[in-house]
Image (tube, rainbow, N blue to C red):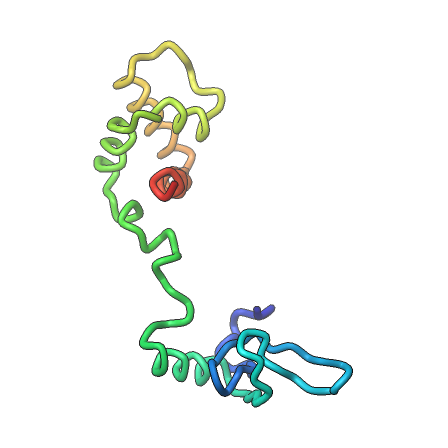
Length: 140
């Protein structure tokens, strides 16, 4: 939506006066703008933060819902020990390890594999990558 995230709140946005949608289209034939969502031709302009507050006041929720941010999910709040337990308890533990570390040694028992895997993750600063992978597995 914005190219410069630093100026996001001050850049003006065009929005529909009826439904507050940001899906504004320009029609060349009539030389006018309209809402692609509801068809309204009453288009307003305001700084993003002003529009966002109006949207929240009307719909009683934020336009950008933090629930969609994986970092807000419970998996990102797990301790290292809890992450180990999560991988250990998963029926897909081998797939998780192979996805994160394709050259991981085979032939180890489950406990040794998990211990060695977490050593690999910590040394290579890949714990967040594991959390993203677990997030995707839980969502599907």
